[in-house]
Length: 313
Image 1 (cartoon, helix red, strand yellow):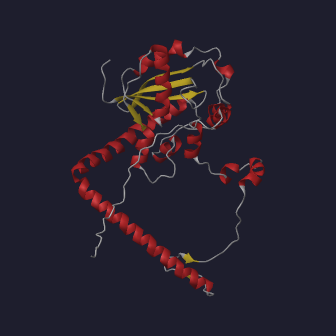
Image 2 (image 1 turned 30 degrees about the vertical axis):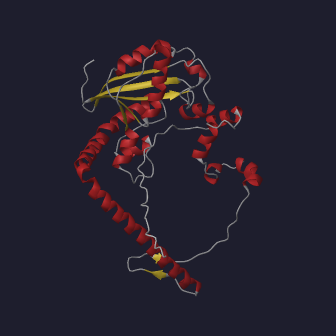
Image 3 (image 1 turned 180 degrees about the horizontal axis):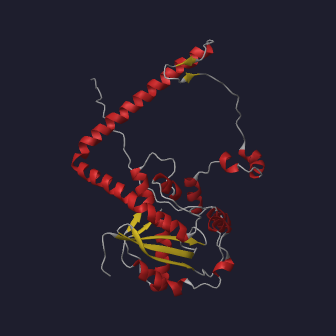
């Protein structure tokens, strides 16, 4: 198939669960986006021939009854691959959709899906790193795109397809600017270190000033109002340290328990991959997975200073 640089396949899948090595696709939707316009659509429910996890059902609302008379992946995969051709595929956290689709292709046809991938979530983070959320609905709200997302494949796909041209234009502009800076990286790194050091100094200065404010109020100081309207005030409250083993049963009965307990995702991943954790426990932990994410990071290692040692004889 002859590719066009202005044509993309925007897609989304719903699945029986999150582990692509064990779970299956139950709904696939894609649109062909040409020159920023939707020119073709494809969607289908798929019989996974296995149970749908309740945690996944709560997200997409697809029941066993809805898919039991639908085609299997073996029957529908050729149509899916024909639709996406060799065009770049676009998805919000596209690694999730790709892993499921690629796994199905490998199992059924013995071939990998080799389409280039564009992750709109990573693009969104690049263009608007300050946003508190980088989910699909947040993206469409940020770009003033009307949407009706209900975690069904086609609704999410169409919503993303409407937002993607605007997002790509901004991303391409930023990427073009980034490329123009590559030969300046040594200098820019020096600037980065200076800014980082300046921020650390300023944070120390702010902490130092706050310590003065604290002494001021502890010596019966009154509230202070700045010329710009901000008010400097002081309060104190008594807090407690809790033993989780004692209160965990009570927490489970609370409606807002998710706000009380923050999960250590890294530790949970290590437990699932550990040889020392019972398989039944691992399965329960896998059931709790709600999202697959791919992260990229830059690390700066601190300099190691070699101090000269004085010797005497």
